Length: 76
Image (cartoon, rainbow, N blue to C red; front, side, top):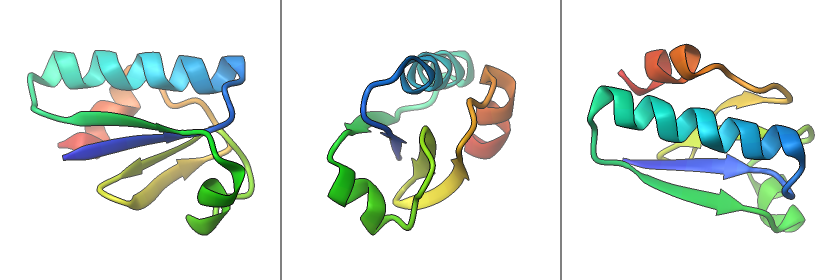
């Protein structure tokens, strides 16, 4: 499984990444986290607001920081 954090490195992007790492650890799943910071690549996902979270290339959330629990629900 690949979890992608889409954002240019703002505090919200970093918080989303931290929450994603915690969710993956809590579930004990094998997942790769990729940070996508290139604006053209972010826009290729159709994302206009960051931070965004994609799982296996599918955007699940954009424009907000999901909690660890919310990310865990998406990963299940």
